[in-house]
Length: 285
Image (cartoon, rainbow, N blue to C red):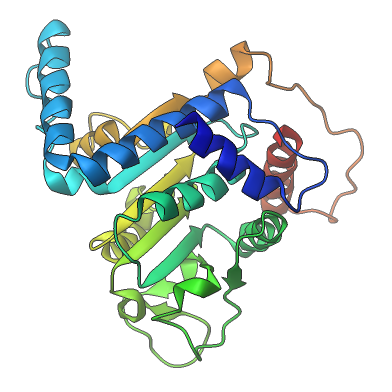
């Protein structure tokens, strides 16, 4: 496993200057993903048995009754990473791309990266290019969309451009364009889980139902509560590594900051938040 991870790092570093070195928590996240994909590929039934044995023991020891149902095969098709802003989720995504290629669970019809907004789509496009991963950024042209050759790499798309059914013009894409076997990467995985965003979650699930999903978020805590038992159970079974902000901060990576000089009108609140989050992520790399 260690040799595989070092191989992925060499591939990502081949075009990068300066080179990056994995921090311990990034290495652990990748190690758990590596073990999981190997188990899923080579001993799926044994993996299900081991997970349910652990779950039964955990529930009994913590007096949690049957709050979480047993694992079934459909639960094995998602890995989620709960990682603080600035912890390098972008690089994890790039290496997860190579991990899936190595274990080749299936030959995907499409490799899709879903982002919450155009600014993050552009940032991902630039970073994927630095890592030598082929990618395409959706710009509103409907030609040659769907059934994309895997050799063309990731197709980057904002979730707000997915619709149930396309009506008229515009840049939206009907979800049925991609209703094949997809490998799906979802940035800000908690998006689409609030009540007003449920339509996005449903569309995203349709993209994933025949394939495999990697999700990344710093704020899964926003959607994990007893009032939504289905979502709580889904992510209790999917999160493979938790390095949320409390761990990130206690390890000394958290930063305190203040804004000294931003002229009114030059930067709206959404753009300010996006720029700050992006800068933190890049600094961590």
